[in-house]
Length: 130
Image 1 (cartoon, rainbow, N blue to C red):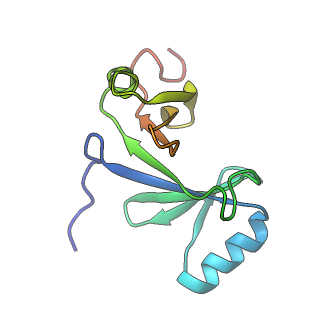
Image 2: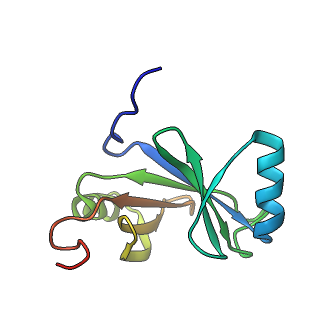
């Protein structure tokens, strides 16, 4: 088995699956696929894979089910430059950049209305304690 590699700039890195009932979702995915989790509170749990997390389950009734769907998250080496590129290409910002444990991210809609997100590791000026 090879060692995990660093995420590649602008590649798909993480997928969030919206759920209406965290307990039921955790039990289902654990029983069906053997998934294990890293809990971040009652409304969010990371899906563990070798080398880190592959995605998360998030309580989000508005996106859950047929009308919503998973949130595809890309990774960026430079979040501000990616934000500028997304808007220049015709994307619209749904959620402006925000800090979260582990980095920063923003959400955008593509020209078809699909919502995606982009995240980056914290920089020296956005790291906790800076």
